[in-house]
Image 1 (spheres, one colour):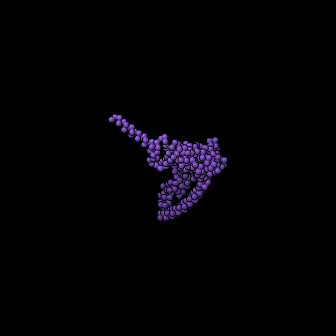
Image 2: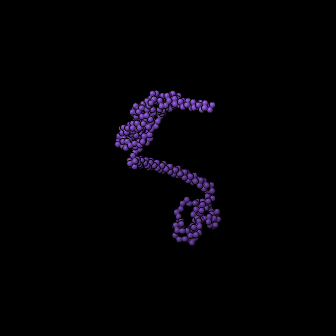
Image 3: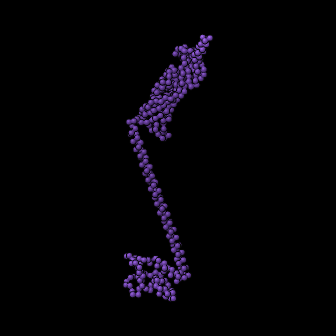
Length: 333
């Protein structure tokens, strides 16, 4: 009984082994080539479950048919205007004919070896026909880099087609100058930017001068208008003040004289003022009690409008000086 059980388990294991040797699965991302003693006998590109003779009679080779990426190493090229540039590019490729691919390059490593030679030669030939200013520029009308890369990809696809794969696209990862030329290029770029900056600063200074001139002109015009308006306002105010003074004088001349005299005292009489005036001066009549009582009885004389200041000669005996602290030089009227 135990022997039959081991025999049964052995038959099951043998069955699984035969199934794994005979049946195989093809994925949607790959193609399978069935070879018999090393010679291809069948190419399978559709996914599914298939059968073959067990090894070593027949074997399978799986080929990836997805889009694959290949990075080219940095390579130095010469443009049509004799400028050295260092380019780092990459290419995308796919297998189009699995049988030709297996016969010519056999695996992805062999395909990338051929691809490196083809893309590098096409890059050198295409970049040698354009100038550096047409590869690196901000002017859309002069830019030729996209068209150049498209031509490289098209030519590379035609050259790789016999090997069972094709190039889908070629793009640049980096475009720079050789290390020996970088310092001179940077210096030239710096000088160009400084020249542009100087031009901008000059234009800015010119615009600032124009703005300041316009502002000064507007300021002068505003001040002139303001001064004119102020003068008109002052003249109107002076006319109204004179009218008010005249009306007040006509209502009570004596009170008006008294009020104006007191205002005059506040204007020129202080603790540092010395006045020397005749005793009968009209200005002193409100400071002399006798004159005040006499003025109250006598008719009022009109107040002179303007009199020249008396020249001090000699103080008369009848003069009534009003003396406070001696005035400094230049303060004696």
